[in-house]
Length: 148
Image 1 (cartoon, one colour):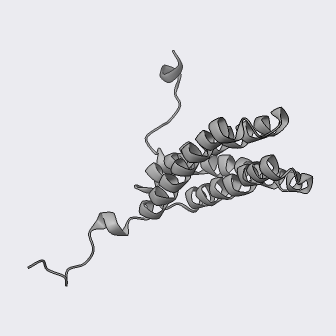
Image 2 (cartoon, rainbow, N blue to C red):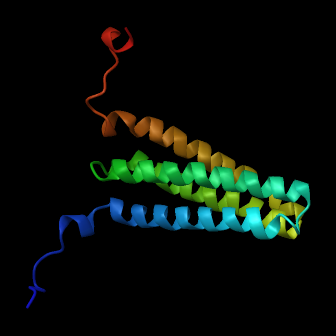
């Protein structure tokens, strides 16, 4: 009979675990929405709407990979800038890509006003990742031999 009184394994309490799950869901949705746009919507949307869908899908993919990078770094560090980067990338996917997906299928132009907020969130994520870099890669130091 398994021991149910022991503490959870370090892997199950890792701060990276929720982010790995978020990354997996985001990746799943990227593939599903990308395929849906490429196959089901191509025949019913205008060319402009299809291009909007492609843009949403591209940024969704890129920032799902960025979430994965944050997840990897969170295995060894819980630095605040890493958490800010994760939340910023996730917010960006929801606001930027989400508003463009909805705009493409509904044609409601006001949704385009939300898109720049997602763009700002993406930028904030990249800045936070830049700030976190020394803490997640402490052994990296630029020297003249690195560039020769």
